[in-house]
Amino acid sequence: MTTPITVTYGDGIGPEIMKATLAVLKAAGADIAVEEIDVGEKVYLSGIATGIPDSAWDSLNKTKVFLKAPITTPVGEGYKSLNVTMRKRLGLFANVRPCVSYTPYVATKHPQLDVVVVRENEEDLYAGIEYQQSQDEVESIKLVTAQGCERIIRYAFGYARANGRQRVTCFHKANIMKQTDGLFLRLFREIAPEYPDIKADEMIIDIGTARLAASPEKFDVIVTLNLYGDIISDVAAELTGSVGLGASSNIGPNIAMFEAIHGSAPDIAGKDMANPSGLLLSSVMMLVHIGQPDVASAIHNAWLRTIEDGVHTGDLYKPELSTQKVGTQGFAQAVIARLGQKPQKFKPVSYRAGIRENIANITLKPRAAKTITLVGADIYVGSQGLSPAALAEKINHTVGGALKLQHISSRGVPVWPKGGDGVLLVDRFRCRFISEPSQAISYNDILAIQKNLSSLGLDIAKLETLRLMDGKPAYQG
Ligand code: NAD
Image 1 (cartoon, rainbow, N blue to C red):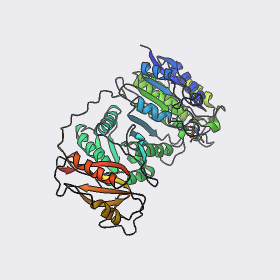
Image 2 (image 1 turned 135 degrees about the vertical axis):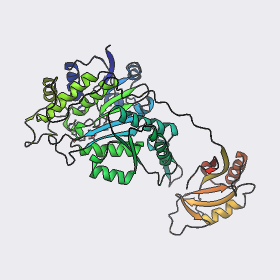
Image 3 (image 1 turned 90 degrees about the horizontal axis):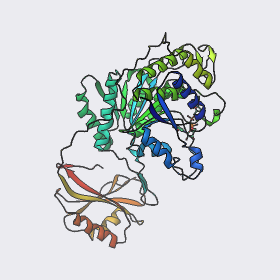
Image 4 (image 1 turned 120 degrees about the vertical axis):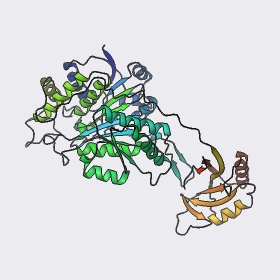
């Protein structure tokens, strides 16, 4: 059955590389019906802050498959990132970026590189929840959920299994962020044994990134949180030799989006110079996703053959490695001419029927309800120019009942009753009120403190409750 797909030609080099990609798809016999939508620069400049008109959502919700060329986000305030909007609104929780070296036909320092980065795409610091708490202090919330972690971890293992991969490595910073990254790592350790055929290991993100940059051949599939994934997938892509080669999929339970990793490259737009490979290889991922693995294999093999034959666009062209320098459309024609051929030097690709990238039916494990005990609150107040000790004295006059002022901190560092020497003080302090020894309090106890602080004229910027979960502190710092 013909599969309808939504396509946007995008901005900059977008129209050229999309034209080239669709020409190859057509010549290879992809059974698709293209529905075109307009998103991006034109739409932004028409006054739609998201860059996406309502009609585009209708098409996406209908076809559920999106082949997207890069778009230009106009510089200036008021324009929202189209990619972030799409990921959130379409629930595209998994970003998958395979990064492969094509040595010796593409110059790279890492001939054995073949790594897939699976990045959580919706949560973490990219949830975009930010506040200015005082004149001096701003904050961004790192939001991570058990469900979000479990889903991406299961997706990574499922992807590894479906694609004949051997190992999944978890990149994290759980040694510092014990709640957020700690949850991610704990769930990775919990879930990994359910996939005994796939090896599982873990690395702290800093050394992991260093190792990835130095010896990428040691990695197979990497699963990680959003911000780390954004950074390391660019590192891995850059190591392959050209940004023009990178493909990606963004997978949600209902909808999937496929796009090159590069941007709209305005510097070479309209010159028939762009390498269409990133988008073409993304369309190969799309064909596997929509159940046309034979067409996907045919295109991928023809593409490998083209590369090893030395037919290269300008970004890859090297007189000692290449035989022919071609433009965007010339490259597409070279791939079309090789449809039906297998690569001679590279290993041919053979996608299997039934491998769907969209493991839509990931079942999340039910979680046992934990016992929650309220034991205190961190209340963030404006300092009003007071020293921590003066603030503590002012507050202590008014505090009574179950809660005591335990300590005051500045930027997460204790400054009262101990500490403070050499600590940078700004115009907001965190005051920790806690029952000692830890015993259950009621929210009214916290409300009473807030009322008192307010009557002292203090600016209350924020409050975090302090709880025990099954008897263990569910807070850090
Ligand atoms: P870019 O990826 O567009 O370009 C970086 C460099 O790589 C340029 O020198 C460019 O010529 C080159 N390049 C990129 N793709 C190429 C290709 N296919 N073939 C040959 N060379 C290629 O990044 P940028 O210049 O930082 O961003 C340009 C615009 O793209 C910005 O408006 C940015 O917001 C947008 N952007 C869009 C997406 C997207 O739609 N997914 C992603 C990244 C950037």
